[in-house]
Structures are given as structure tokens and as C-alpha cells.
Length: 158
Image (cartoon, rainbow, N blue to C red; front, side):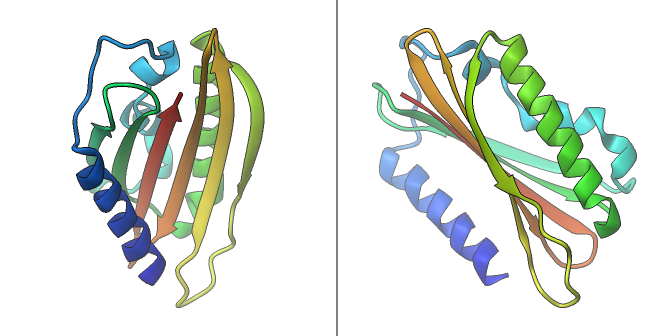
């Protein structure tokens, strides 16, 4: 839980420091402009429990690159389904990058096996480029209490 609080606090501070403003006049990639984790999660609802899902997000940063936006989503999922759910999310994000015309320049990540009483953090990352734009998307999955699973997506472009 301490890791989750640290990551959440860091994201909030980043948002506050940068002024939480956006400017649509600058060039961003197609992927940046169209990506939302909510749409991808909705496609894979077979992994989720029937309870509600909560999604929030902001775009933050100066009026010039680098641009950054983040989304946070809390889903209810049986922890045994997390690895398959994340693999499906990873595959769909990779496909969304390709479909947007971006080139994937690198991949990373790790999925943790749940350990009773311990909070694990899962991680997926893609570096990409499109025309003169370079970006990275980082997806963090945090096992929380009960069936709660928190997804945090940070998308940065320069």
C-alpha cells in the first residue's frame, strides 16, 4: 500500500507543479490523441468482476513538449485473472500503437505473482515514435485490498 501511496502522491505532485493545463495547438502523435485505457479495459470485461469501475485522468504540462497525461482506473478483478488481463491489455496497447501509425522502439515490463498479504506492482512499458514525435507509455498495475486492482497509465511525448 505504501508503494501505491507513493506513486499516487508523485503523480499528484507532478500534476500540481505542471499547472494541469493542456494546449491542443501543438503536434502530438495520433496514439497520444486517441488513447484511453477505459476503452481497452471495456473490451476485456470478461476478466473483471461485475462491480463498478472508476476512471479518471488529466493532461498536464507546459504548452510545449514534453506533453504528459495520465489515467487512473480502479477495477474489481479476481487476482487469479490479473496475469491474463494484463497480457490482454498489453496486446491491445501494442495493437493501438501500430494502428495509430506509430513505430514501437522498445518494450519492457514485468508481471508479479501475487503473494498473500503483500502488495505487488505490475509494469508494462512501450517506447514509440511517429514522425518527429517520440513517446513512452508506462502502465502500472497495483494489487490493492480485496478484489481492487488499480491501473495507472502515464503517457509522455516529446
